Image 1 (cartoon, rainbow, N blue to C red):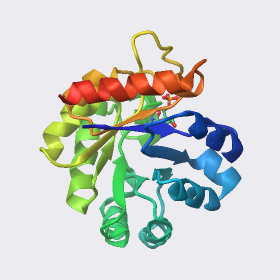
Image 2: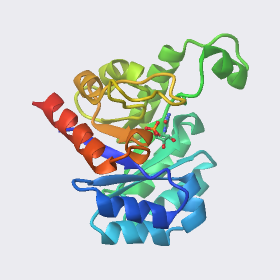
Image 3: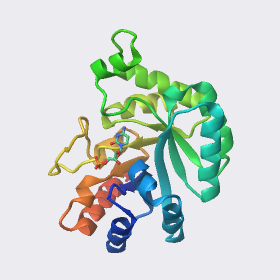
Length: 230
Ligand code: C5P
């Protein structure tokens, strides 16, 4: 069954822990750069002590030795999964994969969901880029480097699954129920469709965080992911 990861995109640790106290069935939480910068790694320890799996989403992109050092620190802290940019290149990803060992799964961020073909082509400065082909290319490099999988938008899941084969993690943000606002996500999908296409981990933030009753909405996502798998 696919895991549902709750994105702790809240102003601080106090709010995040208060929310977690209200929810049941949470196994994975995503710690991003905002809450990490505010609260520091002690917050990760608090989450792990509560029995949660931590997905550290800091999207590393630096020289190989620096990324490897950060990965080793996350591994030592007990982080279960973490992100790095596949555009950091093969050597960076290989160094990171070596540092991750057996307990930390690394997933490569391909093309950010905030990019479209125009903005991505401008960022790379090499003519018009086919985003889908680029995602495929980066997923192949991530696999060759020994990463556990990739992060991609809902619309690229089946494409990435064809590159990764049966194994490999596909982490997908932008998960919504039919009645949810898209917010600033250009590409969204239901939990059912994402899992059907081959996603293994679904990241959900605002639909739960901004709900009148977050516990009820989180249960609905869990249920949909469970049904999709059966
Ligand atoms: O609130 P929402 O459900 O849109 O949250 C999605 C989460 O996934 C956010 O924490 C966002 O930063 C993250 N994310 C994303 N797109 C990516 C990578 C991460 O939306 N490509």
